[in-house]
Image: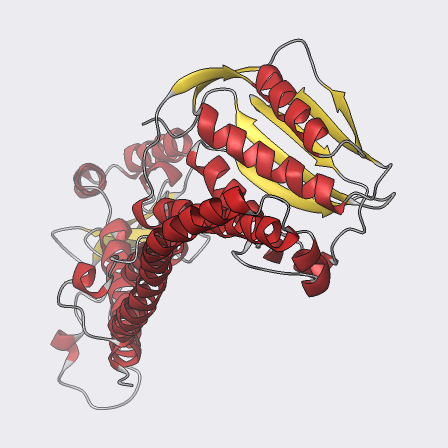
Length: 452
């Protein structure tokens, strides 16, 4: 298997992290430089103070200059002074004093202000003549970078988090998009759509996930063909059996007319009926599995339907008791009388077969809070091992070979019942009763979830 996705993610993440560090560092430095500069209006205001101080200094009136400085300090809540300085050689080479002329005692108004220092800097506004300057402690209102701490937090923490979150979402979508396609295809395949494929939905993608999609498509093709062929074989076989069964029925009927009391003829007649029922059920099951048809829509009353089925079962099994707990009515809409009726009949007959003579089968019908009716059919038989509760709905499954053969159950009744109920939006589940026996729970929507 190639590792294109690994190298793609490795390169993307590595390059992304390096680029992110570079971007954040450059953006932070640039923003800090811009926020470190005094506003243009404040620079002009400081220069105007310098001009006023210089004018008063040149006038020679020190009292007026002192008074002006005092007023400035009170107004701006700061300190200010006019200072003269002289460059005096102490040691070292002489002759280069001109290079040091102009070195300031304070910070020039056009220079940056360090944002990390708590104290305000001393600003120097030099006079045009002589080595004299106005020194002013920068007023608080002029200090730049008022929002620097917040801005730095935004640039160094929140912005990277936002970018990383965005990249994570993009990577997540890049990886999860094909996986969701694969998940959807798996769901469709499990529902019986054997034509679903994934790889063609991924476009030109070529990595480990596309290889997984190819493998899924190959598996789906192989399994789908096997299932379809198996179902078709069963359907064809059942269909082909109808003709010889018809001939057999005619022959048995003719033989029975002249040997009506022959027990062997009667036994053959019963077995012929059972075989024909098996063939019919197999064809119905194959039809529901292969075609997944939309059955006819009709309204029905579950109470009336259950009453008819119970009466038939009482006639067929006179040595068992059926106890019913039914409301006055239970109408469902957009369902199918035949599908629901056959399913309930199969379930009830199965319960009667496994209930010992003289014991009772309970049929309960009630509604629940999810707009569905619940039908519980409880027998008094031995139950089913917990591990096999879901397996009993598989076609031709036999939990007890000898007992199944004795009860003439061919292993299709429950499988057919579940599919018939599913076709009208219902469900069928099995559970063991605490007092012994099996409970078959049928749920049916008041309005079918599967219209035609």
